[in-house]
Image 1 (cartoon, one colour):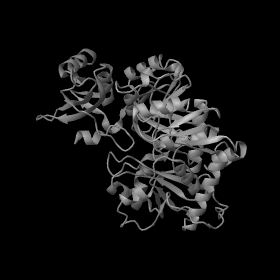
Image 2 (image 1 turned 180 degrees about the vertical axis):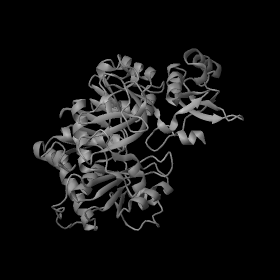
Image 3 (image 1 turned 30 degrees about the horizontal axis):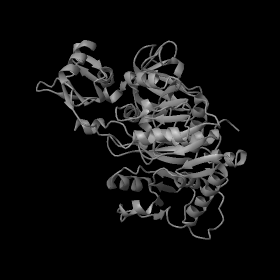
Length: 502
């Protein structure tokens, strides 16, 4: 059997076999062993089958992180279903779209959330996990013999910041490969205690949970993003591994956070994905947590994870995306699909075992992004055309330039909004930044800098403008600066560029 020839429920089954009495999950005051977690998952599988979940049927999970949420994920996979995790922060019309587009047969939620929903348009059944299960459930029906690792396991919906969210169809092989590869290059161990703050509808958060199960580690579930609560959880559970996204790192390093005054001798590893880690913020974390390794990662949901920058390279390669993750080939191509020379910007192509199956119910979008791999040695191999413009140097290290659809031409020069944003962050005058283009009366492209000041009472636009003029060429200097108390975010926590633009 190949490295990744497994269905994803294997990680729980093997954990229950190899370390049945080891703690798998901590949810508040409740501790579940691997054996208890596996038993709960089988119970959920029986319940879902009792409510007519068939092989390949979709089951939507509108749930916050909890031990029952984890059991429901694995229960759906054991029963042969396809999980559709739904972000609990979404509005009614967004939830309606996901339920309708996915064709979910079952919606699993809580009584409280159900009272807030209008399910009149939902044709399937609704189950509440906080209501008692039937006392007698039929025996578990085995999934078909023809079931294999390439069958769909989950549909992950994008945030929808550029229109209605698309569902990305991810296979069991994809999930298992992601768990094994990430656990490997991060060096996760059974002794690790992993704090899960990110939502499971986000591929980064889902992989953190699955990588923990693959390793046999202890997973601590945490809802909420208040810095004081997170710091308390890091201390109380002696957390060793912690994953986050840039907005979370900004919050934890803000003046309202106790992080700098919190001793964290057990924390050995933090990881970042979902956006660039500003260099000044990275420097603050390296100073605050000098004993802690920091791994920066880049990926897109269509291929999960593409590259990572090892902690020993942080100082030598500022701004780098790193190298390809194991078992993955990254290429840089021009508009004709031909390889770009070293240090020449081009589109990033990703080929490997984490490339998803495509977009759910969207053949046109699938054909545009999931295309034949021009570099492949074997027929039928596919690559994800990422839409990201990057550079690859002669040693194989990658640098992000911009989204292809966000590249701007200002005064005849092509530039990326991220270039301007990085300079603004480096000023240490702002905590959040986004650059949005606009056009003047002569249809010339101008740049507008939207910022959240670090110290609102003393912030002066002139000081930031002067810093920009000093540290970037004239054509990159923003035309004006707009102040905000906070910038709008997508459901996955990224700054919502479209909403700011409007």
